[in-house]
Amino acid sequence: MSRRGKLAFILGIRPDVIRASLVLEKLRAQKQHEIIFIWSGQHYTDNLKDVFFRDLNVAPPDIELGAKGNSDVEVVASVITKLAPVLSDLQPDAALFLGDTNTVMGCLAAAQHNIPIVHFEGCMRSYDWRMPEEKYRSTIDHLADIIYTYFPEYKQQAVDEGINPNSIFLATNPIVDILNRYYYAVKEKFDKMATPSFFKERGIEKGEFYLMTCHRRENVHIRPSFENILSLIGKTDRKVYFPASYRTQKVLQAYGLSLPKNVILVDPIGYTEMLVLMVNSRGVITDSGTVVEETCVLQVPSLQMRKATERPQVYDVGSSVKFDPDEAEKYDYQEIYRKLEGLYGQTWKNPLGDGKASERIAADLLARLDQEDGFRGHRRKDYHLNTERSYREDGL
Image 1 (cartoon, rainbow, N blue to C red):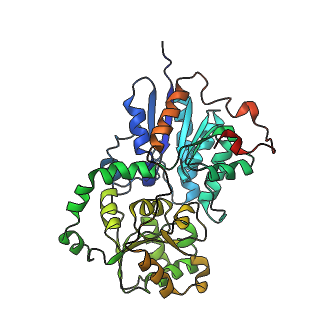
Image 2 (image 1 turned 135 degrees about the vertical axis):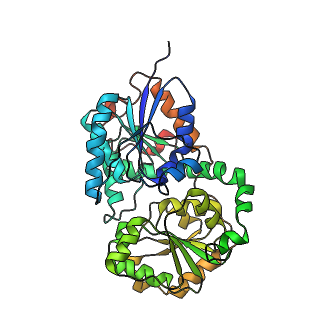
Image 3 (image 1 turned 120 degrees about the vertical axis):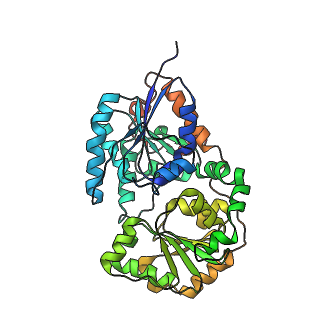
């Protein structure tokens, strides 16, 4: 008789839902193994959570932890505290976490119970140590028994840190799969939504506005950097449509900062609306890792407000222009917009994958669940670092 395995799949923010939706779909469609979808509660309002479940046809979580807090420290502590007894009761074969969020630090609860840890979207590095995300993803990568990463260069980064290459599975980037399913396969739906009234209701004109997101702590919570970002977006004659996170809005109020007159600030929006705005914009101004991937695949120019990125592929193919808010004095703002405008209407090669990443990850997870000890031992048996071994010996 086939073995029945158990996987705890733990997510907590809206980009998690986007990136994991097809893997979750494939895992939940089979009946041999038990998949428990746990939502941390890090994002909890309808427009940060439930609308993404609806837009991406993701069935609701099996367990909601309700982990909240007024700071990153409180959220992390709440996730660990609330997740620990759940994992203790479930005793899954493995606990899977995605990305580099507060929720990912729930891996410490799994580690305390000696439950194997799986890191989906591992080995990414920006080498900007100001970022909480950089600390989080480094921590979980060094605790993880299995890591799903996107590219050989990401794997090499981890190997250089002493992580066993046998723990790392190359999958390519699932954002390609997501856009193939939820945008390109139903593009007619998005074309029909992009009516003159859609844009008029939002105070913008199709193809003549910039879409913006801005949420990173090193940008928003360091006041000079935030002020430089506001100065940048005020230097264009185009309207800037800005669905701002609630935390960003709170920081604006706390600092007493005013938005430039060309900026239209709104509350967070759902995935479908975001895609309509993205593909009909002149370009996207953002500090989001997921958004610069999406724009790259969708052939939309982006202006990336980052000192360093863990997605250098967007620079390699020329889909993105860089602006470092920490060193704004180096830049001619008009030259930045000239470069961004120059990308409009251009095309570039998609460097992020072949659209089969979700299939690869789901198949590997199910194969491991088939085994009694599928998530253990793989790393532990040869944990020592052999410095003479190259990751290319794996044929990758």
